[in-house]
Image (cartoon, rainbow, N blue to C red; front, side, top):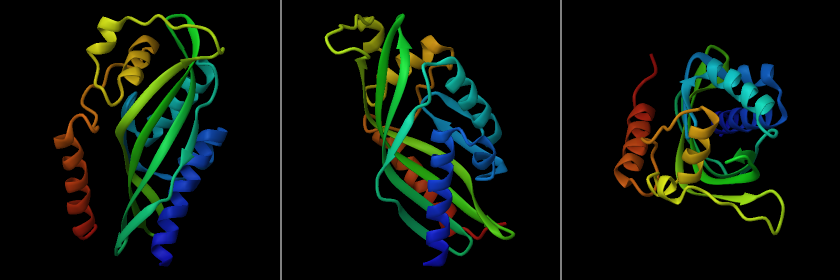
Length: 197
């Protein structure tokens, strides 16, 4: 129970630090070899912090994460933590102020190395996303042909990410690609069962 609570606290601390701009605190949640794979970035933990800082300073503000209950499985000094989340992010799309809504499952590999628990990997599994204009009554005119070419589970995220210069990232696991979802959970189960080096 103590290990599960430590892993859970690590995940909560990292998400809190991201949403509140506590970058040093966020950095303390990662190892030098931490890997991140989300809808708009695939990088190290350090680069994810730098990218998040840039995103917060160049977009319309900091995104917010509403987190659901965290399920944790522990094997020795390794833990797999999974939780549902909704992201609310102020963005600009086609020159119009808007809010991007993303529903996903967050998958964290958390390890205890030496005396503390930190995140070794964070991957997002996409369920659905949507976008709404900032002001009630406004209408958004998106490129429907381009939009239809993107993945159903996170097409608005892809649409925005390309416009904002963060790239396409079409290979993320999502409910529209169940084989990619299975691979994430199978890989994490194997990782959890293996003894840590």
